[in-house]
Image 1 (cartoon, rainbow, N blue to C red):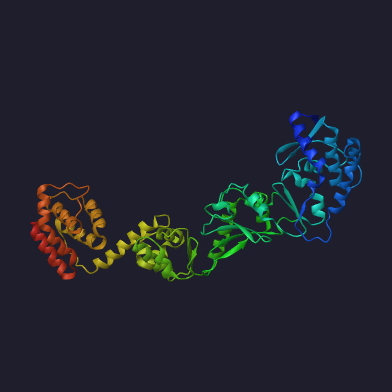
Image 2 (image 1 turned 90 degrees about the vertical axis):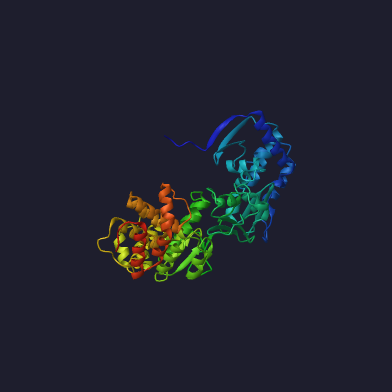
Length: 499
């Protein structure tokens, strides 16, 4: 299928459109000087002087629409011809036919007059539209390396980058951002801040990672700027803390990524994400200890970094044991120790477990790379503590049923406290009166909580209260004293067993 033309043929003019265009033609007929850009540069000679000297001559024929139409066909000055052609519309008092063009997805009706490009006619007939009016000046701006800034009812021209502050505010306020006091910054200081700096103004648009939206703010800023290189006055970069020291840095956006951002193919949010990911990957390539929480860089200060983390002592102990001998970057968004542990877990789980327990335990646990890190180090720690504690306790040969259960409960209580004790009681599946009473006594010895999940008879509760002092003594002893305390408890329970 053939591609449709952007320009459409003439058609009869609706009265409303005719009236709007005639009103603007009247403004130019009365004062063609409204088309002249305001000067904000330091040119030795204005490139528009000759054009508007020609336009001034139209005053003598402005009541003769045919003379104006004829003027719109002569010479090589497009601005002059577009002005003469538009003035002729008002002088003629009507527009029998309109053409239309599609610009940025919008259908724009306009009247064709003279021998000048449609873009110049549209720019003139829509001189009060900040975007449309720029169409009139394209050739002149590029040829003379001008900077044209279009905003509100103003068009400002400069031979050097010299963006008016009102232009920057006007274009930025077209974006979906609403910052405090109608400012240019969201005001947040977190990891990852997009900065669009206008060098001639020495002003910055600052958008943090959390506030960034799926729009390309740069497109708004350059949407009404006409110049050969719209980026000669603008620098785009992302501030970050992904560096080896405390200072952090900024990564200037350039090349293809900048072009994609200018075209809207990359949004603010995507741009920040891409840069941060690249910087983090770059940081990870170096075997340097760098610790970052959010927007704060602690450099290689492991103690301060761990001190800022929130989590269990075990999580921090595991991190410290591993990181003090392994120089790697750890970059987390929050101050949770579990996040830091999870970040390095998959590639380092075996070394982490070995660092705070032993290589043997790390080997015994196998591949736990996909397991929950916090739960896994808890299990590893129980094994480690169990080996250490059990090594200081006697081994009973051919223990009886009650002895076996009591020994398991005591070691669980010593190693993992109440939580591990409850797991051992569940696993033991005891049913006899004496073992149940001893289990209840262990719970009482470690906690004042209810039995939660288990039901004990009144007799078992009373018996447990009697046994509790003997249980406490057993938990607190080691070596041969543990053997003696065990015999005392077994005697008090009436089990008839001994060790």
